[in-house]
Every structure is written in structure tokens, then in C-alpha cells.
Image 1 (cartoon, rainbow, N blue to C red):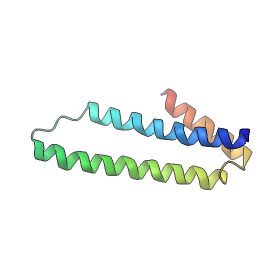
Image 2: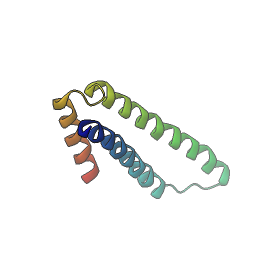
Image 3: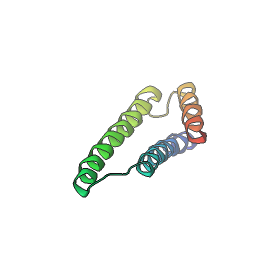
Image 4: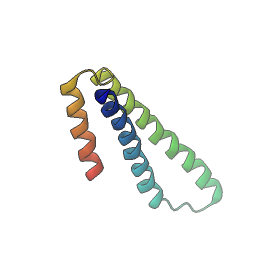
Length: 85
């Protein structure tokens, strides 16, 4: 049970990582017009969401949904480091 919780917590942490990426992008976003804003926001959202989904799927694949202990630990370090940067 603890292994499953650890694995699922990292899914949450990965989503937090991508939420931070989105906030950073949006903090630097200064469109000149409303139409420009609409188009760019859609593109930005789709790009970040595609990256997040790919990262989540890669995590599941490489850890076999948390059953590979060493891979799970490697991912925990990787995501932890990214969150602390």
C-alpha cells in the first residue's frame, strides 16, 4: 500500500511541476491584443498539457506503475530536483 501511495504522490508532484511551468510562462505572457491572447493561450496550454501527459506516461512506463523500486527512486529524485529548482 505504501508503494502505491508513493507512486501516486509522484503523479501529483509531476502535475505540480507542470502547473509551475504554466505559471512561469503566463507570468511572462504579454499579448498585444485579445485575439493574440486567445490564440497564444490555447497553444501554450496544449503544449504544456501534452508535455505533462507524456511525462506522466513515461513515468508509469519506466517504473511499471511503481513496481520497479530503483526506477521509482530515480524518478523521485528527478522530480524532487525539478521542483526545488
